[in-house]
Image (cartoon, rainbow, N blue to C red):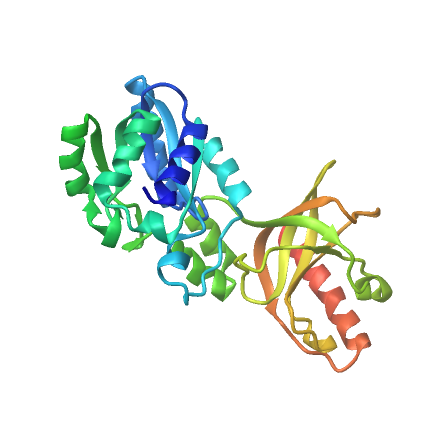
Length: 310
């Protein structure tokens, strides 16, 4: 037996609830409105039929394993994904390590793991669902297997907006434009970034506008570079903020940063976890001839942010 089914069996066993379950499977990156619709249907039917509710998700993204050359970033971190899924009423989340060996399992082999380890009695899938080697297991194929193994399959019609599927690709396109209003509409919530506050160059402080630098993974999706109206969440509540995301071309840097100036806040944030929600893009990234011109623009950005928030 290959290592992957043994690994997957252990990961499923640790998440198992010891009772019959309704299950949804997918990466669910971003947990957008389409995902929420599908999972909501799974939770609703599971409760009606007396089934515990579970999500089986994958990490890393299967595309990064099947197509190693692809450059894919995540709309939310794994920890945040789990939190968002639980907020929808999911009782347990199983994280499967997606490997090339797991990708070679047939649809029948994969669902048999779910039946044996999770006591799956209901599988809820979207209209574009497929699993197993070569994506052989579409909803119809899995339904046939389900009749043999003792579980039902419900195929949920995909959620659309403006005639287009509400999906992670649409979210990424809007994010790449810096169109945070469309991103929020597709997600069903504001797009957020979070991470520990780390030591920066403290240029903002020298300019009179101290900023908190948020550390983030290189695999994290970022919006179009520029300046954004944001809301910052600290231990004592939410604060209005202005956030610069980008390369800081005035200073010739080559790695993107996320710097937040929290309006009305004075204090030390280094080492603390900071979460920001992105409301609106004020402008694109700009290069300034000197720090005085930069300082003047920051003052304009803060005034524009206050006007937006009011």
